[in-house]
Image 1 (cartoon, rainbow, N blue to C red):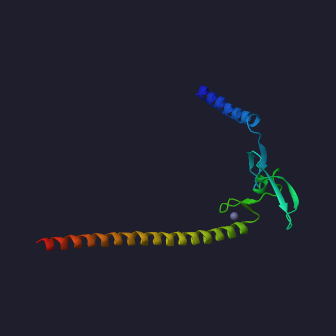
Image 2 (image 1 turned 180 degrees about the vertical axis):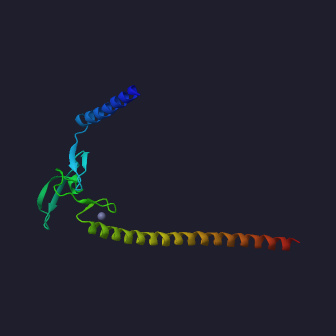
Image 3 (image 1 turned 45 degrees about the vertical axis):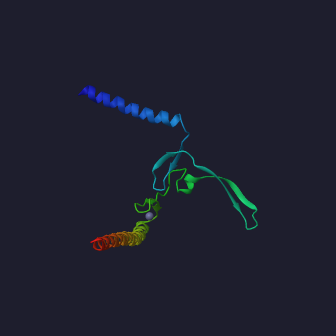
Length: 152
Ligand SMILES: [Zn+2]
């Protein structure tokens, strides 16, 4: 029993060790925090960007980290937001999450209605093509019968 515990201990340490080597070696990772306070280690996602005015003159350009556009922060949030299970983003209040859920339900219902409609269109097409095939088969049989009658 004691040895078992020790083994678990050792493998546990090894697990942590692996994490640390991963952090030191390999790709450089940046610490980010989600607005609800979770820590994320990720590669910075740097993109060049530029804004032009209506004459096509560049008014601003530079590089930005797309992870920050995602809403991630470079410091732990001082005033953590609530994570939203409906949109996978964050909201300030429970009321906003409730509204988000309502919006998502309406959106899902709309998509479901549309999917059902598409489905019935597809089913109709299938039924129509089967009727076409049956009609052709019947025509062939009729022709065959006529031939048989004439032959007699
Ligand atoms: Zn939401």
